[in-house]
Length: 259
Length: 298
Image (cartoon, rainbow over all chains, first blue to last red; front, top):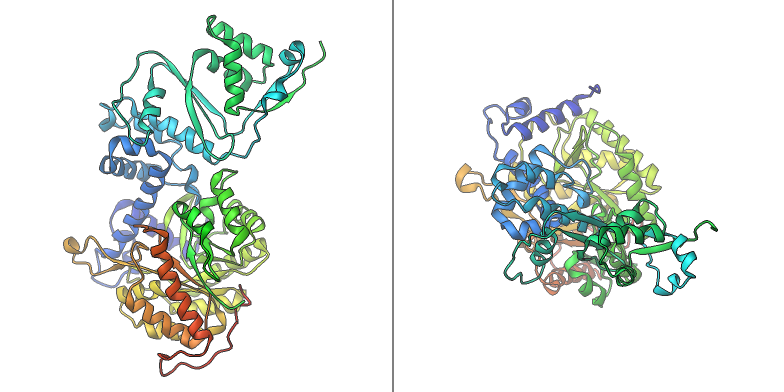
């Protein structure tokens, strides 16, 4: 433990008073007879509200699905065990999806951790570095040159595959006026990217996911297309590729080695 | 430029802020909300900065911790300062970070001479990295801590003398702390030297929601209501004495329409103009003229 001065000794005591929900640790700094000052709860409540508000901002779909009361109670519990480590709360709650998966009151909401995971992907994309998507013309190369080229993906791009229709449920829940929501049995993927000003999200099919998973590991376009075809032999590969270009997924195209 | 009134900028008001045509209007943001690699929030702030002066008001540097300011956080602040060229930067006389945990609040401490040494060093370090002086804001207090060796005003004045920093006087915090801890807000404000004051904050407060249960009569600095009339009165008294200073209307909760906040901002602006013109009809008896336009810190 780092040696601390009297200010640090007070901070240790105050942190303990906040965590243990009793004024006992700071008794030495309180007037005689003042054993339960109301002010300590003010600090505790403000800290809890700061954490809850940050989590609600970063996980808005979860918050809207469960309602303010449930979310506030869950977020407060999460924050007590997982306090922020940085003053910038834009990325706070990276562990929230996994925590929800182990949170007993969420047992009858089995879709919730996936909703939180996709909210986290969306929030991360919102604050990711800028990137300028390539226009379709950039891909007007000879077929061999195109197949050998390696695409660079947008820094805000996030995608994931799920064993069921959770991405569709998440997209529906994000609608301003969510209608009837159903969980489809079929596996689905999700693609999230911020090509320009706004974050966009859409469903991703098996071939599209295989393409991006390959491209992410520095594959050539030819290798990525092959991966897509193997994942779904019936896939419309030209349409898949055109859609990804239109999504703004690609920011660069490095020429391949001359064959 | 003579000191004018500004408004805390909220994301839901970006479009209104861009379109606003009020003379002298400036905006203030918490830099922590813009510590991102990219994204629309930064772009919107850039667009607003093209037409308006900006103040960066930090809530996360934790100057009153018994530890050096976090270098990563300082460098992120510096990057935002380089990018947005704020006319003023400020922080709080409080701590939030300790042993790797960041509590999103402004926490108190016993104002000892040892604390003064540590905090002066932390302000010095901050100003060295930023390459500029900062303003330090008085906190709202909720606990009757013992063990203070200096009054808060003496503590703040000592910090300005040791580090060259200025003061951001939050009049609502003075009102809230004075009510909670039982001292006179007027006496507190009168003890602050005019030449050290670089900015003034005005905000609303509320009554402790736990009052019924705990018997608490605490006021809470919620930033969730209009500026209260007694706080306006203290503000007039302050600027009558020290002269006009850049003044901010802060609202962080129960955020109303932009125009509602602008009405409060315009009220502060009108009081500043009146003070500037030397027509302070309601000047308190002990008010005395100060050199106006002493906004060199800004």
